[in-house]
Image (cartoon, rainbow, N blue to C red; front, side):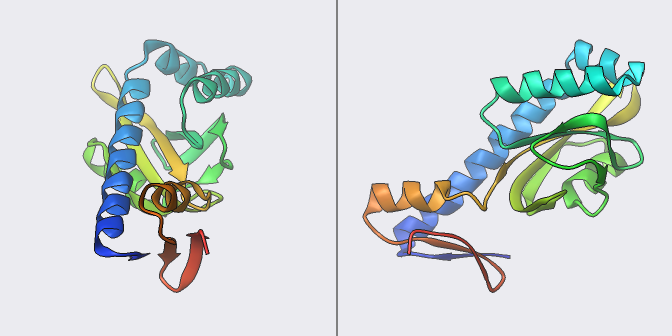
Length: 169
């Protein structure tokens, strides 16, 4: 649960900003998932080529992390930028994509990102699900509270349950 502390207008701004970032990450994921070069690299099984591809994509996009996840829910070898390899089946967005073949996003933990905006999009090849692309923003950065403080001249704090994630205080 995301808890926002600010006056009502600031809370609405932060909620809308998170929603906008979620939709942006979802759009990026959907575009990447349709990229024929990425599909070719996934099929190749070449971890170094996948690493080079994901790093190049990550450098072009203004996101904090990208992961290429196989159909069993593990980040593929070399398929990570800004996050760790390994199983990510604890991600609600990844579970939804792998079970429904529908893009999803939300605010959750992902890989080594303790709290972030996480969007996942299915990678389909000839109608077959070969995995998903995960794109997101790390909420442990000071970005959202700083922007809110600047625009509204107030202090802003984002909590993950009872833990202070990011603040201007």
